[in-house]
Image (cartoon, rainbow, N blue to C red):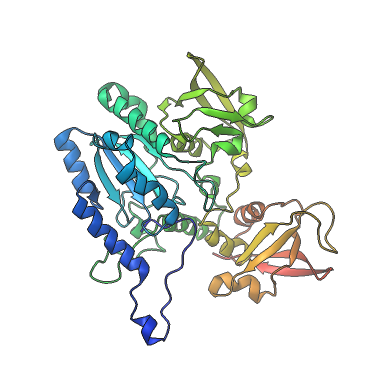
Length: 443
C-alpha cells in the first residue's frame, strides 16, 4: 500500500472478544477497492506488465497512478479523477490506465519519485520512456496548493502532445529517467529483505504484506546510515519544492509562475509572474513534479545551475538559474513521514518544534530554542527518553551549536556530522534551569 504521509498506525488487536471479531477496516478497504476497480474495468489493477503489453498492442501512452488506498487526502483527488471529472475522463480514455497500490516488486530504475508521496503519477511510453510525472506535496495533510484536477489535465494534454510525435521528442526525454538505484526493487533493500515478498498476500493479511512508498525512502536512508558516513544531501532533501527557492507555481497549470518571493533565488534568477516554464535542462515540463525532478537531480557541487526555457508574453526566452552551495538545505523536511526514521538516528526519537512568541524563563532571547514536543517511548525511538529527556524541555544547544534554529537543522547536523555510536552534548532548559545532557546517535 502506498502509505499516506500522515502516518496511520495499524489497528491494534485488543483482548476483547467483541472487538477481536471486527474486521480490520484497512484490510476491508483494500479488498473492497480491488473488487470495485476490477469490476468496473476502467483501470488495470496493480499489474504493470499487463499495462505495458496493452500499450504495445494499442499504441497508447500509459498512465500509472500509484495511490494509497487508506489515505483520505488522496481519495479527495482520486474519486474525482476516476468518476466525475468531465475534462479528465476523455483525456484518460486515450491512455492505458493502471492503478498501482503496492510498491512490492516495483522497478526502481523506472519509478523514481518522491517516496514521501502517497499519490504519484507517471506518464509513460510503451518502451519505458517517461513523458513526465505528476503529484507533489509540501505539507503533511494539505495538498490543494500542490495538485489539482486542472493541473493533472494539463499534464495529460502535454503527454499526448509529446506522444503524438514521439520519435522527434524522445531524445529530450532521456533525462527523465534516473540513475541506477541501489537495489532493483524495494524488497531487496537490507531493511526490507526477508520481511516482504514481491507480491501482496491476498490469501492472508494483505495490508501487512505491502511495502509502503515511504519505506523505500526509509530503506535508502538506512542503507547509507549503516555505512557510517555522511548521508547524501540528495537523500536528505529529496525533490525540493520550487517554493523553497521562492518560485510559486500555479497548481492548475503545468508550470506557470503564480508569484515570485522578493529577494529569493528565483527572483535573483529573473523569474516573473506569468512566466510559463517549457523546459528545464532540455526536458519538457508537464507539472510541478517535473520541476522537482530536475531540481532533485542537479549535481552536488559548489555551484549548481539549471538551464531554463520559458515563455513570457508569448516570446520564448532562456535563462541560467544559478544555485549556490547548500541551497537544498533551505527546504523544510519536518513534514515528511520519513523524518520519523531520521529522528531515531539523530535525536533519539525526539520531536522538536520552534517556540513561537515569548520564550520560557531561562531560555536566551536569541538563538536556538526548540521545544521537545514529543518523546519516543519504544525501541530505538526511546533513546532520548532513556537518556533523561522530557516533553517540554527546551534545547538551546546541540553538539556545541546554537544556530540550529529548526528541527530540520538539528536532524541534518546529526546525520552529516555524526555517525552511529557517537554521543553529543545537548543543553536544555527545564523549569527555568539549564542542564547538560548527552544524546546517542543511532543507525
